Each structure stands twice: as C-alpha cells, then as structure tokens.
Figure 1 (cartoon, rainbow, N blue to C red):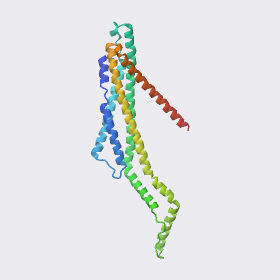
Figure 2: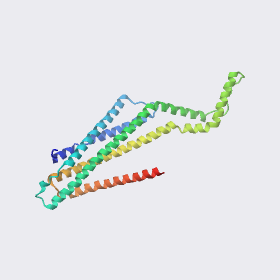
Figure 3: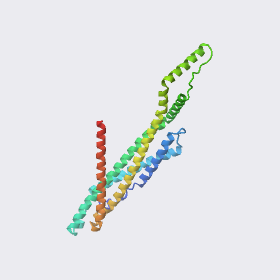
Figure 4: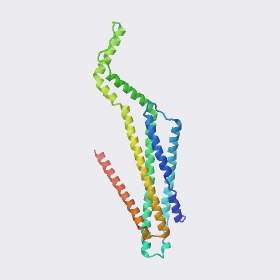
Amino acid sequence: MEKITVEDLANAIRTINPKRYTVQLERYVKSAAVLDRTLGSENGGWPEKRRRSHEACYEDIQREASRIQKQSTLTVNRLIHFRFPADDFQGDIPERKRQTKIYFSKIKKQQMEVLSAITDEIDIIQSMIDHSRKMQSVLMTHSETLLKTAGLMSIIRERIVRRPTTLLRLAGRDRKIQQLNDTFQRIQDFENTHAEGIRRDAEENPVTSAMSSYYRLTQGTYSEIERRKTVIEQCIKDLKRGGKLLLKLASKGYSPMMKRSLDMLVYQHEDRTRDFHHHIRENRILLYSDSEH
C-alpha cells in the first residue's frame, strides 16, 4: 500500500464538510411537517411543484450522506495506515519526542471515534427519515377515507346529541306506514339503549385519535433528527480542531504551547464519550425493567 503522507491526511479531513447535508436536512424536516398538516386538512393535497422539491431534497440528503460516509471511511483508513514520522524528530529532546507520540496517539483515537460517531448519526437519521416517510405514505394513501370517516363520526355524534326526545310517528293504518313506524320505534329503542356508548365513541373519534398519535410521533421524530443534526455539527467542529492539532504533531512535533489545546480537546472528547456510555447504560436498564413487567 502507498505511504500515507501528512498531506493525504489533511486532504481527507478537509473534504468532510456536512454543511450541504445539514442545510438540506433542515429543509426536508420543515417541508415534511408542512405536508403532515396538509394531509390532516379537509382540502388535503400538495402542489406538484412542492412535492417534487420535497423529493429532490430527500434525494440530495441521501447523496450527501453517502458522500460524507465514504469520505469518513477513507479518512479512517488513512489514519489507520498512517505511519508516525518518528525519524523526523530524532534530534528532539526525549521528553518532547515522548509527548509527541502520546498526544498523536490520543488525537488519532479522538479523530477515529468522531468519524465513527458521524457515520452512526447519519445512519440513524436516515433510518428515522425512511420510517417517517413510510408512515406518511400510508397516511397519504388513506387520507381521503380517514377524513370522510371523521366527518361521518361527527355527524353521528350530532345525531345522538340532537336527537328528538319524542318518537316520530306517521298517522294512518296503511301497512307501509305501520312498517315505517315500527322502524322508527326500533331506531328509538336502539338509541335509547346504546346512545351513551355511541356518543362516547363518536366523541372519542378513533380517526382523530389516530391522527393525533401520528402528529405526536412525527413531531418527536423531527425533534430527534434536529438534535442529531446538532450532534453532527459539533462532531465536525471537533474533527476539524483535532485534525489541525494532529497534522501539526505529525509535521512539527509537540510544543508546550499546544498543551492546553490538546488537553482540552482530549478531555472534552472523553467527557462526551463517558456521557454517551452512561446514556446507553441507562436506556438498557430502562429497557430491561420494562420487559420484566
């Protein structure tokens, strides 16, 4: 395999830029939320131009995600195969050489873990988007039926609430008139027996309840996507900061002037890593405790 140079590392780190990805992601989430509200309205339907723009945004997100992940894999590969230029520091005092190797190892580890975190967050976001799109597609397919059902339930509720207290009867002894009067009587008897249940079912409209649950789920999904987008943005900042220090260590070696920046970066990364593992443990405990009940 070709020797990986400091310039190779610099070029790999420099090309990881998620700006277009995060901008398109924010646009997509806002657009999806608008589409959700449109699906729940009586005059549902989306202009074709807006729908095409929404789909183009989704495709752009996929392309950018793929590009970032490929570039992250390339950068990790270069970090793995990069050979620390120890010979370049043979003239240095032993302590400086030792500090150079120690910090280079720590920052290299930080860079690889940050790159792994970026690809993981992108995978999770993509999975969340795909899942929300499936739910949205189902709602789009059945939105007209759901709206008609909601309207029917509303009519039924009004019928029960406003039904007459006296029985409607037609005058006459004709057989057909008698049959109609019998039908009115059965309707009245049924409503007298089941009115409360019908009224309650109509008021607790399952369609409205389903739509409400859908909005709650999607809003939670969109909020989580936004949170993970922020995590990616922070990871990129850490990647760039660490990358500059790593390249400086590889090309010029350690300097006491770098110590504060190096220690702060390592400390912040280790602190976030501990928080992450603590969060994982808490969720596992919660998951297992729920499964036991």
